[in-house]
Length: 114
Length: 110
Image 1 (cartoon, rainbow over the protein chains, first blue to last red):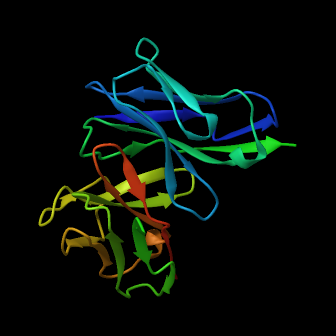
Image 2 (image 1 turned 60 degrees about the vertical axis):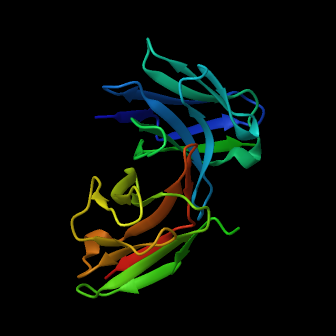
């Protein structure tokens, strides 16, 4: 069985500061890991995904995440926060790539302080 | 190319009423999914369909039924709605690269 834990349900950062959203996973098989973003009253949009090709994954909007097997982590980062980054972010894990049944974390709401 | 569409966008039901949430995708994806989103709980899988004609239970299937009408459409039915089913429901479809989500249906059961 797979699961993910997102540390911090709310994170606030100043505009221009580093964004760090934490995700730890548990999986009995090599995992496939995803980060999704949800803007208010919208569906989820894929930010990036890890599928074992490279441990550092770059996504849209300047976000990236690094897969660290030793730490069972897949933290999301962005060097400089923009006001438009304010949203809720979900980490998700799947055991199968191509027929994803995603197991989601509980989400982290990111607030950007002007 | 509309992606994943869902109807209705918003619905209010009384306890015991039934309704069907509709979902359609135009990306020729084999796999489709229904999730519910509740505050502080993330998204939880209700049912999924790996291909036309097949459906399987997810994490929280009780109180729901689904129909994979054809490759494009995957509907979710509440036979007798309960207040615990108040939630936001998302449909998704997937290819090998990722899942694509619809805009959601907000359901309020009184």
